[in-house]
Image 1 (cartoon, rainbow, N blue to C red):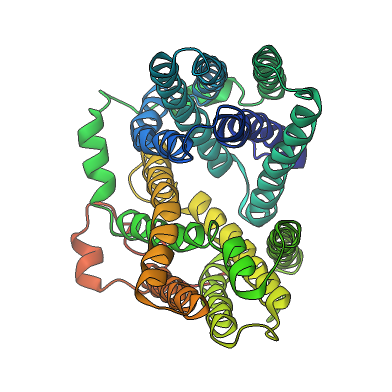
Image 2 (image 1 turned 90 degrees about the horizontal axis):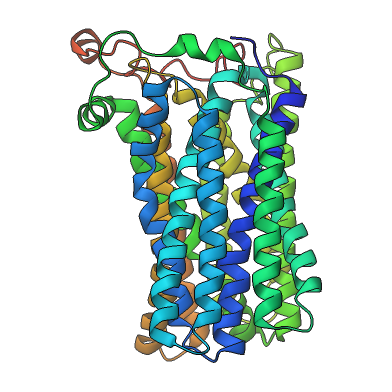
Length: 457
């Protein structure tokens, strides 16, 4: 297969941007309309967003379908079509809630479920294509570019949609949603045209393709795939649990106004961006000087993943101290450090995911990527509930709000330390007896060799 250059990677980034544009409308804009314009309980959009994560347990099945077919493009295009339809159906359901609440909610449930299925099909196959076609030296940069383009899609869509929704009306909401969905689908079609190439047909597995359950069992029996699934779930649970409590923490303990707490969130996202760029830059240096004793090793995705988890834990422990000490603590600097560590960890983990997808039994890349994507989605769905629920429980048990938040941040920091241990265990050498008896000779030691500068970006 011809490796992807930066132009091809950017084209996949455009697809990811299109995907993010539709998702941000359903998870943010429709959320606000239900709560503000329709005066519905915030629990309703929260449950709908959780549903769109829950149905992503279908990711391994979607990945298996693309493994069997041998091509990823039809699954990406089909997933984008389902995603766009789901966004429009969800908007229709939201508008219908104004006149018939029960029918509108039922239609919105269908719409959000379609959104989750569309993300599962398109997102999983897109990542598999990246994993199989991006050279090792470009993986950190590729992950950074694709995710930054997705974030750009979030921001661009939110800004333009907000402009065209003023003044709000149900008709405007439907028109904007349908317009964004059509543009996003067209952008994906243009970006994917001729990208995969006809040679992808020859990657189809030989012989009769196994049933999905058999393929999933084969992947789960691989030590690295199983351990990495657990790592993804724990780390993403820690990553997402602090999202919904950081701004309330700043307002309750430090007296931040809504505008100031929103700016604090911007400081965190700025740190995430810097962390992503830092990993990409280090990967570029390592690829440029692969035999250098220092520069050749700073691009190790293994090191960035483990180090990012540890640094995230330390930043959360810093927030723990801020909760105990109250005003006077360097809150902005600590939040920026948390974002920096989160950004470095996430790109390290995504890059490692791209590399590990091809380890073990052949023609199972889609199942592996789907398994990890499902673990991430479930963790994100639970993260908000766990974070907010734990903070409510802590505030009920502990009279001082700062101390209550400190307990929650400390627990999240411990989750990140556990994630670092899990990532280190993935990297640890496998006993010889296990390697000899394993039916997948490359699966047990995928990380065992450590940071080889010629193989790791």
